[in-house]
Length: 353
Ligand SMILES: *Cc1c(COP(=O)(O)O)cnc(C)c1O
Picture 1 (cartoon, rainbow, N blue to C red):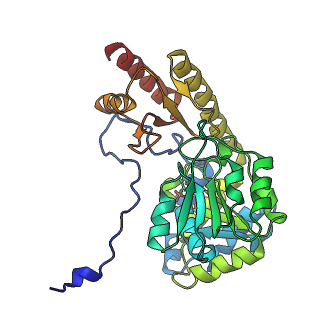
Picture 2 (cartoon, rainbow, N blue to C red):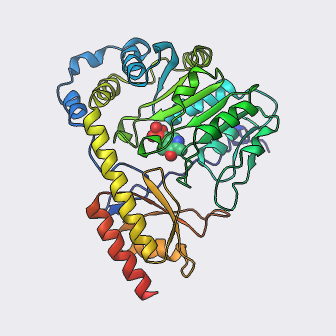
């Protein structure tokens, strides 16, 4: 028997960190920023002229692109904006990964990549990270249909430097290389300057983590005019207005408040080093993070039990029951107060188990 359901799309979607409605929880499971957005961004929202919502947003979000171009020292034609960097990355996959050869990325990485490959029928191949969870750049010498890596990588938190990216680009001159810099502001190396030298390099960024605007959905990409114009053409083939008027206004205001931006980042970095040291003193192994999260394990305890214990105490961290990282947990850096609760419950776990 045929059924209309035979022709429906069957797909396994990406599963984000749990969003709980419970009160009094410590939510350090989705790499969100614990601090509020810039007061200037809040002011842009409060003083927003709602009558203007009758109109479509600023054509092509040019005003937001101009602000980003100025911030990063590039031309407006080198900037693309979208509805969160997930939107930008999904468009980049459709725009640049059209070869019959597989695209390549690390085996432990952002779990949205395989989902987009499946959705857009893009063949892919993964290369295993080494035993220290680092990317072996030599793997990326092989012919491929494109390269995508997060730098810093998620969920490892590790960042590669300029030499690594240059080597990667020298091995991949015939395909597009996407560097997903969702966490770069927390102390990582940014490849934005290299986009002026390498026409096939696309760097993606987001306002979700370092700018505390995950709820506004603002993402961007910086690359050569050639790459950006293809992204624009693909975007304009299905939805011309991906960035709404409010996001444009708040995004610009956030970029104008560099003092606040740097101060919240410095707070996250300071808390990260304190928590890293305290966990190491308790016998945990903590990778050297360049992100707003840490990847952690302990040789004497099950990390799944640790995750469940903390959950029962209303402290939400992230556990991935995936090969190779199921002995680790990922912990987002919250405020000092939140991390004190987390550390107190961690000590209780070590005592009780
Ligand atoms: C969070 C994240 C993104 C996407 O963020 P948006 O909220 O869609 O801007 C992209 N890549 C990585 C590696 C991330 O962790």
